[in-house]
Length: 93
Image 1 (spheres, rainbow, N blue to C red):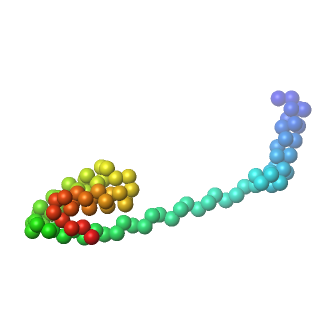
Image 2: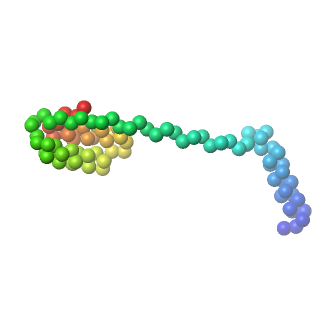
Image 3: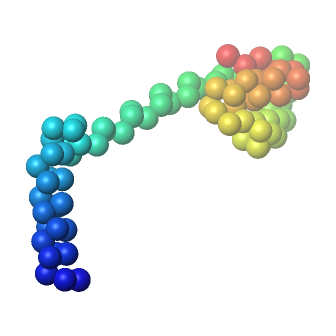
């Protein structure tokens, strides 16, 4: 690069630095990250057909797996899990 070319580049850089605040281009601190979403509430599962604890554990595991495979949010997961458990004879609160 020629000497005059370097002068133009330095001049352009100096002008850009001087003009940036007037154009609203000044450096700004990045916004802090959003707070994490609230933790999902605990669900209480109650057997309605006198299922054993072993059967409830199996049904709960199956419904958790189904909900995890289909849901895209914690709220949707809760809806899918509740529906699955209701279909197997449980009340979910």
